[in-house]
Every structure is written in C-alpha cells, then in structure tokens.
Image (cartoon, rainbow, N blue to C red; front, top):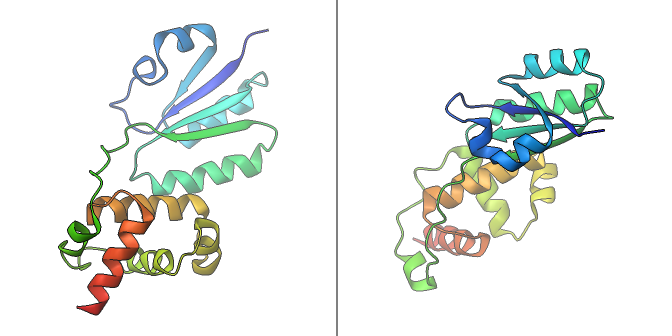
Length: 167
C-alpha cells in the first residue's frame, strides 16, 4: 500500500515537483489542491488519504485559520504545513550594529505587542496565550518582525526594542 498525500499549494507560482522533488512526488500518490475547499472535497472523496501537506507563503495568515478548520473536521488525517519559500536570513548583527538600527515605526501595532512580549522573555506559547493568538500566528509575527528589523533572532530583536524605547 502506498502513501496517499494531498499537496495543497497556496501559491499558483509553485510547482509540486519543484517543492517536493521528483523522487518524493514519484514515490507517493500525490493529489494536488490549490485551496481549502479543494482539500475538503478531496478528503470527502478519497478515504485513503494519509497526509495533507500545505506549502505556505509567509503572508498566508488566512490559510492558518483554514488549516485549523480542516484539522478540527478531520482529526484522523495528519496535516503538515511548511513555509515554501523562506526569506534569506538576515546576517547576524553584533550588539553595536543592532543599536544603530532605525526606530520600530514600521511595525504594526500587533507586531509591537509581540515584540514587547519577546522583550519580556516570553515564549511563543506564552505570547499566544497572552494575546489570544495561535502559536502559528505568533511565529509569523516573529518572522515579520525579524525581517522588518533586519535581525535574525529574538535576542537581537529584544535588544533593538529596548534601545528604541530608551531613545
């Protein structure tokens, strides 16, 4: 019996073989979908599906809600979401370089709340609970904050936030 997978690409630019690789896409029975409605229709029509793979873009916040709905409706199906194209990581900055970065004005109010929680040393789980968000949403906010601030980790983001608040 071979593995049967629904591969949900959230961007029409992506190609299944580009993302999965030819060996993997040839080794399993892959059914392609482009939105949550197609995934649900396929799950209804294919009882042999073992896994739903979701290739996300960083901006697919609405898709996270749709994934949660599918998980609730089909708890017996394994669901794996991953970011299909991650931005190149920012170069590691020294503390002195972090201190010369611009103010936090480009962050959204929610991103500033998340950054404040990061500065308080809270984990993603604690931030999610405090701000009534999912952990996935917190992770997306963190990645956006790091990208916007030009930092590559929580410590650098917290240092920059503290420096900005002092000046």
